Length: 361
Ligand code: PMV
Image 1 (cartoon, rainbow, N blue to C red):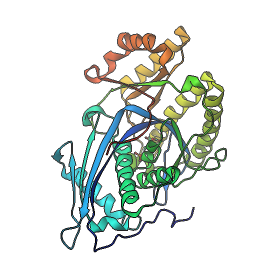
Image 2: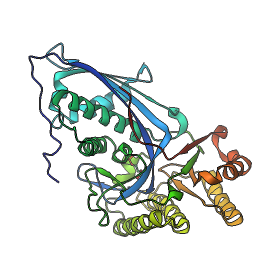
Image 3: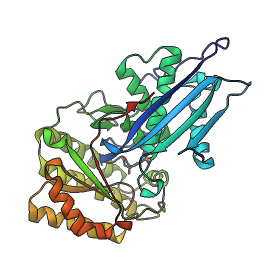
């Protein structure tokens, strides 16, 4: 990749600039998991996810030419000061100096909120970092006049989101997207995500994802630490090969409407992710006993009912139950009868595949 491709320019010091931009951007759930990185947030293996609908972040940035010699950047989370989040966001923006040189010429008021409670056990970095990246690209488009081409705009937004949180780069598209080099998709890249451009069978275009909140506690081991444990992991090479094979199978299944292959690959990916954690040195597990009970019950219900239903897991104990909109009633009644008792405070977030990010202002 041409490393200058995403570098912007400064703005005139003489003119006065002012404006506001805002984006809503979704969280995403990976079916092929990114686990392990190299260099500057590059993935060791390709991943594939789909954008959610209900779980999203809204971020706005009000900008104006700086009033003093140093630009002031301020951040509010859900309308309130949040020093920990502010530090993270400001640092991220400072690190983008080379890509957006005009940012140090502007005072920024950044405000962000999530559609889901912070304690829901859902990672918010994908939606929040992608919303922030989209806002920064809209400011560039407004001030510099470039990024007019839609493809270039979203590619840069994905590139910038990746620097904030790897999986965030897949949140700038609707439907399925792929991040990381994948030989069957020539436009794929380690530097940004691209839409999954193959024609997807209608069965998979109306996927539902009911997120069973098994625990809402902060994770014992962060994803950052988990990725780092893939360096020198005894199964690292095998994992890279496995993810490529699984992605190839899943890409074919998505096109052919092959639900059996979809289930086999998606559940294998979820359990492989956790197996990698358990076989790291030092080992750790993010699973909860209730997670395993739920997985067994989903398999039993699938065998009995013959419905298209399966699970995936993120880096945590919560279970994402995937099924088709056609079977919504039956699956929701199964969840109510057999799974809800294993959720903390009976907490479930019923989500589905979404339309991707939206510009609000
Ligand atoms: O983007 P990060 O650094 O939070 O890593 C996320 C990794 C997984 O959520 C476990 C898998 C994925 O591909 O989203």
